[in-house]
Length: 437
Image (cartoon, rainbow, N blue to C red; front, side):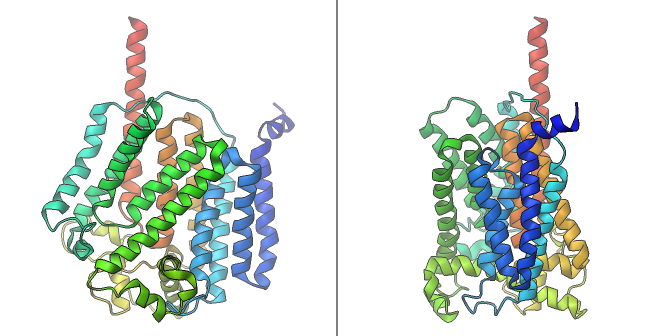
């Protein structure tokens, strides 16, 4: 097969690669005027191009990270409030370069042609039960002592880290159940009830990010399977996610003994023009960016106030003994000892620990990983592998905001891969036995 034929067959893919690289080169000149402007134009152009000219591949990692990571950096970096001080031009430049590095990593692996080997994959009920057992134990542990933080945010810091870890394996069950209900002929009402039940249990531990991760996975899955209603689906889920982020933040401030009321904090930091919910979203994103900036400044000044690895800190809490999580270590720098950790943002945390150049190589590696799992989802063309890819990309975006990787970012995808592979093998064995008969 000639190179010309290969290029014709993969025209859309090569066009996406060329257009995106061109956009990166073109917007790099805008950094002379404003890095935040360059970031906004790059992310906006890529997302609009995907929505208009590449709808069938709208869940491609280039579009997802440009939209979500771009929004995080842009809305959090705008100096439209006094919350956590001012975000500098240098920080915005590093954000632009970080996003470009991720995109380049995606495009490097995207050069490899897509494979197609569709399968029909149903996860057996026994595997669903086994997948749900660790989450059941974790939720039971939280429920018995001290109680569910969803109903009382003040209990959040009293829950054991290992109980949170076990309960977060509910995302394994979530992906497997989503695979099965999208394969079967469920009515819309029954499907909605199952999903609502899963979201309720995911929300019980009180982590605001968990239901948002689940809803974003459902959003991306809907975008793949509802091409004709692309803009309606995107608008509906955008309103839902943004409303959930700000609503949970408002609820937490309303019921927490440690945090001041939302209306007061909005006035304190001169963000009335954003409205209460807009301001709370801005604060949530800006906090990790501002802490990132602080860590970057410390790195440039060669000041090390944290001994040990931030990157591995949350993994170390899984071992016997008492250890501080990365968020608690960051909070201690600011003299905050309430037991609630601070989110430093991946950009600052990585630069602080590994240096600037290595951080951009890590961002490229992240992009390559995302592109690999995207191609796997295309190859098998079943909801389970698609949802696995969506969970991984949302985990990555959550990590970029959170700054410190959680053990579940690794263990949950590995468990899902194992159970999907086992289901695939069982399906092959059953089919083979039927053929023999």
